[in-house]
Length: 456
Ligand SMILES: NC(=O)c1ccc[n+]([C@@H]2O[C@H](COP(=O)([O-])OP(=O)(O)OC[C@H]3O[C@@H](n4cnc5c(N)ncnc54)[C@H](OP(=O)(O)O)[C@@H]3O)[C@@H](O)[C@H]2O)c1
Image 1 (spheres, rainbow, N blue to C red):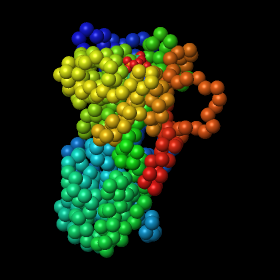
Image 2: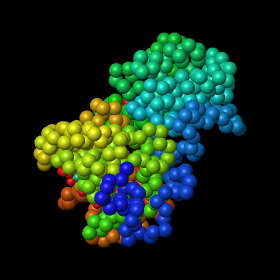
Image 3: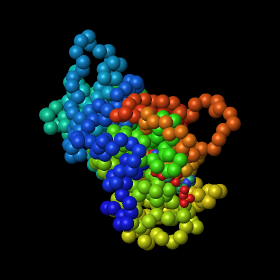
Image 4: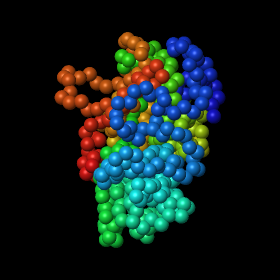
């Protein structure tokens, strides 16, 4: 829905364009002609196994599809030893989980394959909240093919659940299938239940192996693990700018710094996240929609606006019926009812010392409200503030081969007198998207803390 009376133009967030401003060559289409696999567009990806980024699935499948692709048998050639077999089949289970990256929130993405004598008997992945978990999907798949699973091995990317939640405990169904072994990547990070499922399996006489490909499984679920262990979501901050780190000209013109392919790639990340977060400065300047418009859109992420003075216009385009949280301070004007009519819930939190929202408090609130992963896409002020507040887990940076000179930074940060002792972020993926670079960097200490929390 477009806001009446507002100029339509391409925003720096890769939104729709009606009137193209000058700056970047105009030939590039805003949308691709076909659904392209982002894997085709990112030219170079140095990491061995990508880490759960939305550009992984090679094949687009429809949301209702239950089993994405049944894993093949083990590779031909010399027989694999047990460890190599476990790695091979766990990679297949991770591939199953990959197919539901945009679906399971607030539950983790989990994949399962059931194997006997080098043959995959069943495979599946966790469905949307309230739906069956990965083990149940794999059991159903195996049953549909008439397999008896006695003596088989279950490969599951997360410990089978042992408690009644929205669904009965998976561990009971696994035990009933009489497997000889269960191999898991991660133990359940929920401190209330972690390890109980494995204990039940061992008590039933089933051999349990844990920790196979645990780092890759963690990379598929940093938000779920973060919420369970530290109480806050996993937040990646998207920044887009020139190769000299500028996000807009000195006069504010920012459109078409990065190309269409980079903007489309950014939409895939929105589709993966539980929520897309921005600042009121961007809303007032660009009137973005904040919706994902590329990739497998299996559920719409929530929208979040940080707006200390509650200036959000009721006709903002992002208020399109998608559930939205507008975070503001206790002193902001009482516009709650007016915004509620547009499906926006006003959340009032105490202000920090500068009168603005306390960003750590915002993150804690979001963790308490089942948000696993946040895609933050804001202007230089909020981007800088998020970094300063130490709540950024990952950077997703697009850089165009342009030099903008004395212009606005991607993130407004105070000047430093000395070089920091160590690098806060480490690159985990560097590649090219269209004409631009895409850099992914993870906050080293925050990632290590997550690994320590679940002993990976
Ligand atoms: N290149 C890109 O990728 C990109 C992406 C998005 C936007 N942009 C550009 O960025 C420009 C807007 O920049 P901006 O910096 O004004 O927008 P912004 O960073 O999106 O929003 C800044 C506003 O957020 C609010 N806010 C709430 N809590 C805050 C906190 N704790 N710390 C800091 N701010 C907080 C503040 O307003 P209150 O004090 O009123 O709450 C602040 O003025 C636009 O021109 C847009 O085109 C570029």
